[in-house]
Length: 207
Image (cartoon, rainbow, N blue to C red; front, side, top):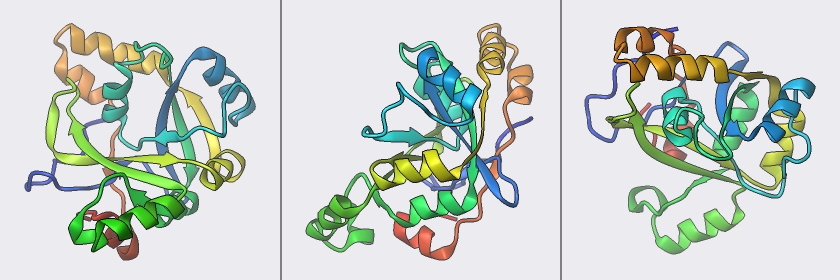
């Protein structure tokens, strides 16, 4: 447990910060109990989880807390920590397209639209969050899976699914009570993930 690495000194820096091992990386999702609990029991996503919808995975614990409102938003009452293979995670990024056109990366808007229409994965870089959920200067990655990518995620990449909602609620209580040091110490430690150079170039990553 502990704080994330210090944000990039340049506003808008893009890093994938995560918990990872030699073989896996942890990502987060939030779901209602009827999806989350069977996933934990079976170790994979089953009905009523829908494969035909885009599913977003987030390596940043704090950004997941921002998105789910500390597991209080409707439909996001259970937060899952999901270990997936690094091979799968990097496959997703190699087949991804940014959600928005960036001239320095795509050359032309028509080239970006063509790439977007053929890519089963979307990537967004959104402001990273502090434990109090205030925005930080640098960016965190959100990865949206659809089509083939969802099937690979569900059937091949996942190695473990854990329900960490009790931890989420405990940290939230510390935040609400002003116990910032305690909250920071309980947050899963995240460090910069070593993205291969071709993925950095594809997604405009800072490192």
